[in-house]
Image (cartoon, rainbow, N blue to C red; front, side, top):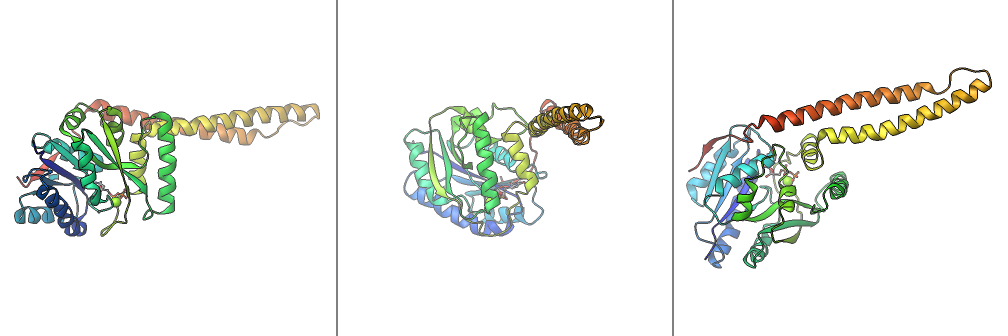
Amino acid sequence: MIPRLAIVVPCFNEEKMLKLFIPACREKLDALMTAGKIRADSFLLLVDDGSADCTWKAIVDAHLRDENVRGIRLSRNFGQQNALYAGLMRVLPECDVSVTMDADLQDDITILPEMFEKYRKGCEIVFGVRSSRPADTKSKRLAAELFYRCKKLTDPRTIPDHADYRLMSRRVMESLALYKEQSLYLRGIAADMGYKSACVFYERKARKAGKPSYTIKRMAKLAGAGLLCGAGGFSLAGCFLGAAAVQMQIGALVGLLGKAAHGSRRAGGGSADAGFCALSVLGQAGMLFLGEAILKETRRRPRYLVCDSTD
Ligand code: UDP
Ligand code: MG
């Protein structure tokens, strides 16, 4: 049986990029169709994640020219992870296999046939892994390295340098629908599932047009969802600071005893007090983040809302 493929792409202010991405991706889709690897009604689903530019218009225009290009529009910006999830849930009833990728052509589409070959040989998840990322800034590479090292400590199943370029079988998508957490971290869920999987390596290219929308804040949020949660970071910082403050207090105590022996009263207490103050602030901040995370998880609000569709 020839499978029906859906390529799911989250788009946030990608009006410029879509002009390049759609034809490039369509060409790869065509090649797979011609080779008889996927069904002729395989398609591209673009998810407009509440863009402020003309992304939705670009998607609708592309659909009018080519029915294999489809789109849904979210009611506001829900973030890349939720946009990806929205797209996957949309295509789930209609396709046998999906591939998720970014709209900026940083995920090398020339490895699609190789990913597909692994799927054909029985792999249910194929991870696109960045073998190198020369286009990224030094600080971004360093942050990623640090993040994946920490992540590997808490979760040994982590696949370093895998983002969201991923092939998933229908069964994997069905399984994904069972995961109910609000703070989505799809690469972590996929790596945790345990189905037969494989990696395909590629060099991460530079963005072809438009601007990256992953700000430091957004990256921190994703890293938070991937590691423990925001509160985890504060608690960790609090632990280090607490240990430092205790050490300072012991030092101050020793100093105080020494000075007392020599007739003087106060010694080094100020720095220890400052340490305890900072610790208390961090503790409160941690509680605040924890409270917010718990509230978010227990409220169970919808992770996204769809307001328009090309179908
Ligand atoms: N994106 C999205 N919603 C957002 C932010 C980003 O759908 O709130 C999409 C974006 O259009 C792109 C992908 O997620 O297709 C990756 O974003 P970006 O290129 O900014 O991330 P980076 O390459 O810097 O990690
Ligand atoms: Mg990018």
